[in-house]
Structure formats: structure tokens, C-alpha cells
Amino acid sequence: MPVKEINNLDKLEKEVLEFVKKENLLEPGDSVLIGISGGSDSFALTQILYNISPILNLSLNLVYVEHFVRSDTYIEKENIKRFAEEKRVPLYILEIKKRSFKEKDLRDERYKLIENLAEEKNIDKIALGHTLDDVIESIIMNFLRGLGLRGLVGIPVRRGKIIRPLLNTSKAEILEYCQRNNIKYYDDFTNLLPITLRNIVRWQLIPFLKDISNQFPNSLITQKKIAEEEDKYLEKISHTYLEKIRRTEDAFEIDLPLWDEIDFPIRLRVLNHILSDLGKEFSIEAQIKIIESIDMKKHGYIGKFDIIEIYKTDRLIIKREEVSTDFYFTLEIPGRVRLPNGDVIIAEVFNVDTVKNIKFDNPFHVYFDYDKIKLDKLIIRNWKKGDRFKPFGLEGKSKKLQDFFVDKKIPKYKRDSIPLVFGDGELLWIVGLARSDVAKIDENTKKVLSIKVEKEVKN
Image 1 (cartoon, rainbow, N blue to C red):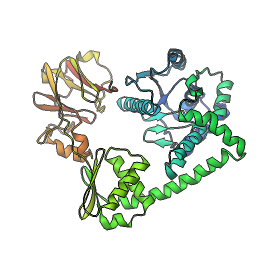
Image 2 (image 1 turned 135 degrees about the horizontal axis):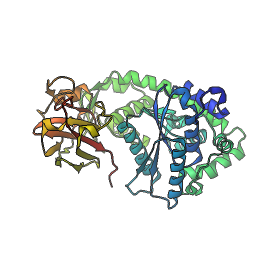
Image 3 (image 1 turned 60 degrees about the vertical axis):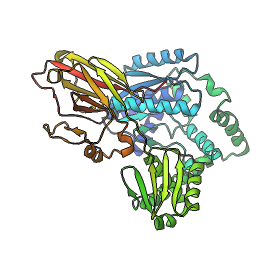
Image 4 (image 1 turned 180 degrees about the vertical axis):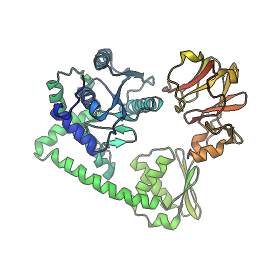
């Protein structure tokens, strides 16, 4: 049973609770999805959040991502299943179907799957078990990669829904906690092998730095705190310039005198924000080359950088290239269709008395009165100019889909990839955003049409 009073908490549990409150990581009543990998960090995180959950009234869920990289993961998975059953915490097991042995690829796919699950299940926060040791390793790795001041900040304590409650806790404290509480975990043997940069930093470089300096790693942690404050200051300056930049649906327009006024370190940050908002991440080296290309040419077409195009007229224009992504599918009822991005749309029909806990605010799973539709198939396609939509709750009043996208601040470049579900020419569902006011369920409903999207990683 979880601990219900602060006085009964373990020493480390009290420290983590204090850190969570200080950093405003959790709100009372939050639902939390905990990423569990089988190692000591994630098991300790789960136990700690489990014990403090009554204090903050938290609703906990676990998620395990199967990588198919190691042959012994079944032991790890079974241990996690037992742990979840013992705690009576729901466990989701996801699979990475894209075969890649690159550390970054696996990490990116893992984050994508977990974030999609949190969205689908309407979970407030995603808790990950990164520790202070991970921060130290990341700072060193970022330094070696030349990531500048921001690299010295290391791992952020929060990013969107993601929170890291153990970021002020050392690995040694985690291991002691597991021993005190008899927590059985499963260490990944590949973490001991010098086959990744992180492992080399962890097992070779950090011990060497400790040998040559008795100030390490405390000196690095101090530098991190200084870097955090400097980073906040530079970000504040960057945002004063970003506020002066015109943003259209698919581009940023910067007056040339304003661009010339911006100092190089701030230019890097401003450019990074712009590129990120346009849906593309670039390395520091690539961003420096883009800035150099901009400054070398006084007028005209600067160039195409991956999916980004840059022009100079009387202003600097940075935009995402226009790419056609037309698609058109027929979805049988019942049936399923796989979309170009790997997601699957599923349509099913149920008797109303068999459907429980219908939520009308879930943009990833929608319900309609089937007898009001009476179709044996639906159409799924991307949007076209002229499409109209009857938003839920507006009693049949329609609006241009383009206006809906503008109201929701959906960038133009993203609109073509959003699936739309039509029934007999009527737009029923903007997948992941909103359902229409058509065929609402009421007290006379007998059959329910369920349409949902399952997020999947492309093979």
C-alpha cells in the first residue's frame, strides 16, 4: 500500500516530493505515465511516485517500450509485469517496429510512442527516471558535440508533458533506495559495454576526470547552474526579437535592418526557434552555415536547407517548402485503414448498451449514432480548399475548414497531412483535433459507430 503521510515517507521520497513541489512538476490530481525500463532508476521512480501518490492524489500508469535489440528483454518485461501487478498500476507495453540500432533513433522512437500514448489516453504528465548522473553525462557529451551554452544546461527538468522528478538525485542514492526497499531491478548489460558515446563517458571519461580533479563533478554542477541562468537571460533577449518578427501561416518574415541588428549568439537562438516552429531541427553546425549563407548574399534566393527555403527581398523570408501529400482511402464499416504515416483508423459498430465511458472530448476516439449515418463505408482523405465543417456543439452551423485551422493555429504545412473522415460527403472527424456535430448520440441511440486512431510506428 502507498504511504499516506509525509512523516512516513523514506528520506529520498521526501527529497523528491520537495523537488517536485519546488519545480512545480506535478499538480494535485494529475494522471502520470511513468516510463519504466526495468533498471534501478525507473523502478525507484515508480516506487517513489507510488508512495507519494496519495499525498498529491496522483493517478499512475506505467509504460514499457520493447526495442527488440537485446535477447534477454523477456526477463526484464516479466519483472515489470510482476511489479505492475503487485502495485495494481495499469501497464502499457509498446513495441518499436522500426529496426534500428542507433541510440538516437531508438530514443526518438521511444519518446514518440510514449507521447502519443499520453495524448491518446489524456494523461497529464510523463515521468522519466533520469538522474543527476545522467545530467553530468549529457553535459559532457554536449560539450564534445559542440552544442554551446545550451548544451551545458544538460537535461531539462521538464519539457511539455515530460517531467524528470529524479534530476536532483544521484545514482548512488537510487541504488541505496532500492536496497533499503528491497526493489528488484534488472540491469541492461549493454550499459556496461563501451559501444556508445554515453557508455564511454560514463565508464572511462568520468572516472578519469574524478581522478585528476577532486572538484569534479561538483564543479560541473555549479557550471550547469550558471549556464541555466545565462541561458534564461539569452532566451529572454531572443524572445524580444521573435516578437518583432512577422509570422504567416507557413513562413517567418524578418525586416533586414532588424536581422542586421541581432548579435550572432542571439541570431542562433532566433533561427533555432524559427526552424523548430517550421517543423525541422538542425544541428548547431548546420544553423551556423545557414546564417553564413544568409549574410553572404544581399538579395534573392538564398537556398534550400532540407525542407526549409530562404529568400531575401526587402526582408528575410524563412519558409517551409510546399509538398503535396494527397491521400484517399475507403474505410469499410467495420474495418481498418493504415494511413501513410503508419497510424491506423479503425471503425466498429456496437450496441449502445455495450459501450461504457464514452468521452466526447477525446479527439483520438469519436462516437456517432450509427442509425443517423447508415453507411457501410467512410472516406478518409486530406483537406481541400472549400471543405466545410460543423464543429461539435454549434448545433449544425458550419464553417470553412480553413478558418477552423486558422482558429486552432495549425500551420499551413501541417494541414495537408491531417486525416479527415467523411460520411456521404459530410465531414465527420478531423483526426486528432475535433469531431463534427453530425449524428450525435442521444437517449434514442441504439447503435454506436466508434472510430478511433491507433498510433503506430512505421515499419
